Length: 87
Image (cartoon, rainbow, N blue to C red):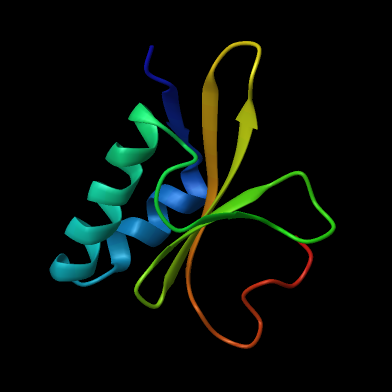
């Protein structure tokens, strides 16, 4: 059974600003998360219950609701020194 992906408005706005090539790669990564959110370059974030998916220089940060099988993408950022600061 596939997961339902919910992209928060902040993440959607970030995604819409990226160059087309990056937009397509990130969109494909999110689509792959629907099938299995633990395949690929996914790691649990230190000190949090959130997970991250690495796609090139970008990070997709998301939370999982296991009971309802919903994946909440709350942030998409280019990897910098401040990417992992507390939200």
